[in-house]
Length: 107
Image (cartoon, rainbow, N blue to C red; front, side, top):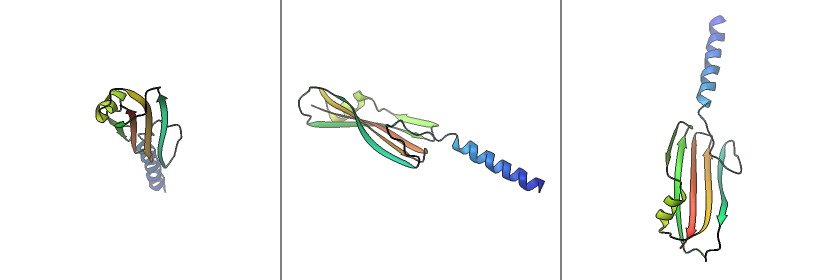
C-alpha cells in the first residue's frame, strides 16, 4: 500500500508539473480547449484598403516562442505603405500551441 500511494503521489506531481508550461495566447475571449478569434484594434481615416499583410508569432507550451507579429512585419508581408486597419487574431489549442497574428490592411 505504501508503494502504491507513493506512486500515485508521484504521478499527480508529474501531471501537475507537465501542465505548468501550458500558456494560452492573449485574446478577448478564452477557450479552455480551443480558441480561434479575430478582433479589430485600430482603424484610420485612410482610404479603402486594397492590400493585406499578415505576420505571426507562435508559442509551444509557453516555453518556446518565436516569430515577428509586429505591424511592420505585416506591412512588409503585404507590400503596404499606408495603414488603414490593424486587426489581430489569436489561436490556442489546449494551452499547448498558440499563435498570435497581426493583420494589416492598407495601400
